[in-house]
Length: 312
Image 1 (cartoon, rainbow, N blue to C red):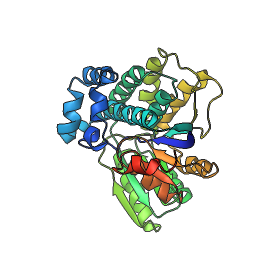
Image 2: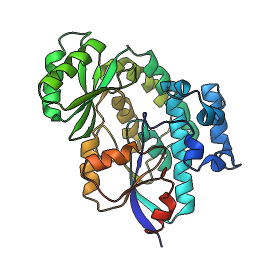
Image 3: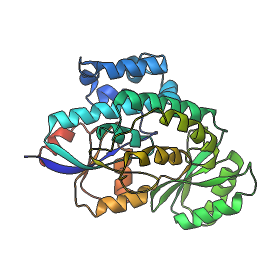
Image 4: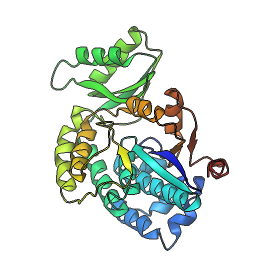
């Protein structure tokens, strides 16, 4: 007997050494049925993807243009193991930033090969964007943070904005280095409990990505998106599309627009469905908890399949 669930795919920041063996998907990655995806990923990044994931070096795994295809590959393998091992019938999908591409593959909107090529290009363009930084602000309301960002953004080379609206208590800001630093200090002075500088040199989900987004549009023009088989809740709109033509513009906007994860979690809370984080790590599980959601599982949990059998 099948059961319904909401599947969420992780984004950049969930990558880690030994993602394949740690998730129990190494065997699938090397199997005749799925090794073509592993080989495609290896060709795109000019490294043996399997060896890199399992042995490192970590600094290469954390390089944006390499991280993105590796994560999409691993999430794809997690998804296929999940579908082939359970009676799961996904009702809705979502992905945190990069994870949206994994959702598109899972919903048969694009192929895994198309997704890998797209996110490799996406990562390369992001690396070429003006350098910047990102900081997580904890314990301060998003409206206050947005107000501070507006005050600090004084000129064309001094911009900062809310980038990842992760939970009521965690908002990531993104922009030029000096503007992010000033906004961070102001947030602390206004009562933020803590600020955490992220280990990145790019300003994701900010206007610093506008040129990259414009260039990425050309790659998206070469893709024939299909209307997803399963509804995907997109980062930019927090809704699903009604036509396949709506997908590419959302992916372009996503590069320089905030990830509206709080609203996504609010939507999930209305569904009364089990939630599965499908992919490496448990970053999204932490965000589900922070958004006061319950009944969530991670496919990376060593006891996941034992737990999921309670549903199926």
